[in-house]
Image (cartoon, rainbow, N blue to C red; front, side, top):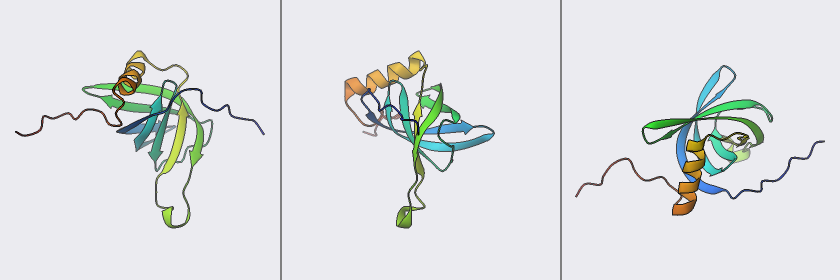
Length: 121
């Protein structure tokens, strides 16, 4: 049985909708946290470990494409069986836009991106 190396990078809480593509299937997902070379997502999709995935992550008006590989998955059972599966994805070559987003979240120390609208006054 192969051992999977534990992460060396800090996970930063981050909540955002994404689109996950695995093979011919496309599903929505919800980001739980990010790191420089990884992202954790809740999704109804069931890709197997080591499966290649592509994620489209909206950042303001731009979209960041991430190519990665599923490294772990957690499926709930019992009364929580209807909860989405959580998957961890390794991103071996993160694009500059994604690294900026992770750095900005880390610097701000906030768990949510800034809203896209101005509050009513």
